[in-house]
Amino acid sequence: MSKLLGKWGQWVVAQRRRRNLRKGATPRPAGVPVGRLWTGVAGVLAVVAGGAVIAGHARHLAAVGAAVAPDRHAQDAYLFQAVAPGARFVVGDKPGVRIDGRFV
Image (cartoon, rainbow, N blue to C red; front, top):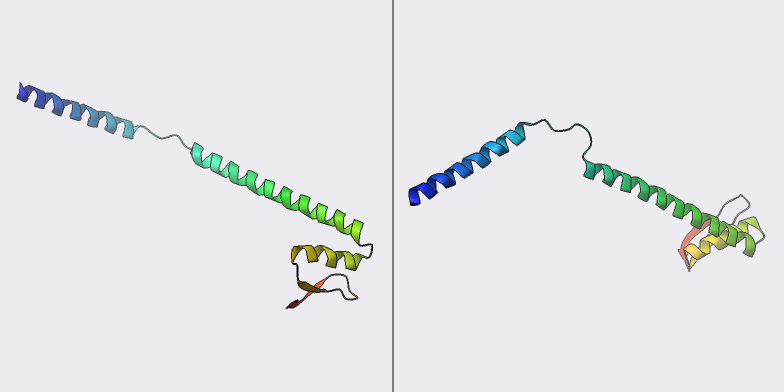
């Protein structure tokens, strides 16, 4: 009886090996795997969403600055002061704002 069970176990293992070898011989479908495709789509959506958030915040800062400071150069300095509190911003005759480098 033990020899019969041993032979049957060997036969089962041989069948499994043959089945696995046949499965490995079948050609795989070409293209991008589904997992990688969804990962790429999620990455693109994250980039687009991040850009939308940044653009929305920039518009909000511009709207707040226009309401608070009527002078354009003072408005720029006021906007940046909220981003880097304690920084010294210098507004010259040219358009734009310069950070002094020394934080007060």
